[in-house]
Length: 89
Image 1 (cartoon, rainbow, N blue to C red):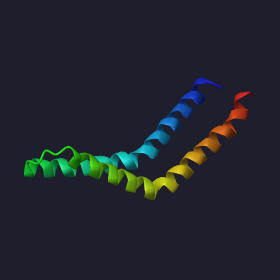
Image 2 (cartoon, rainbow, N blue to C red; image 1 turned 60 degrees about the vertical axis):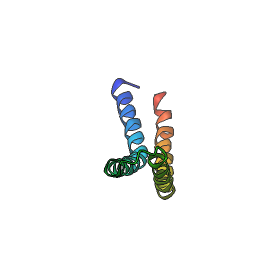
Image 3 (cartoon, helix red, strand yellow; image 1 turned 180 degrees about the vertical axis):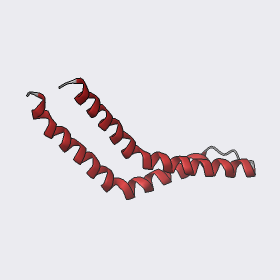
Image 4 (cartoon, rainbow, N blue to C red; image 1 turned 90 degrees about the vertical axis):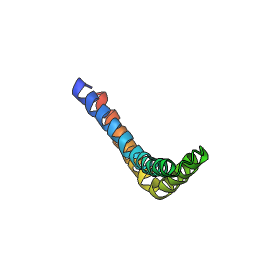
């Protein structure tokens, strides 16, 4: 395995991390921003008002996108396992 191959797999790993975490992080970011604007407009500073909706949105996003995430991770692992025999060459 040379440097280019190592960099390629590092890039693929980072891309997989971004693809798998982006929907959840984006959903939490959007709902957090909406709640922050609501709290600033109404002067309500309740801590649970910011955490509970974020947790609910994250669970909903995970529920609907889990099959995609699981299939993406499985495909990525298959690609890695298919590459392992090439390392010994």
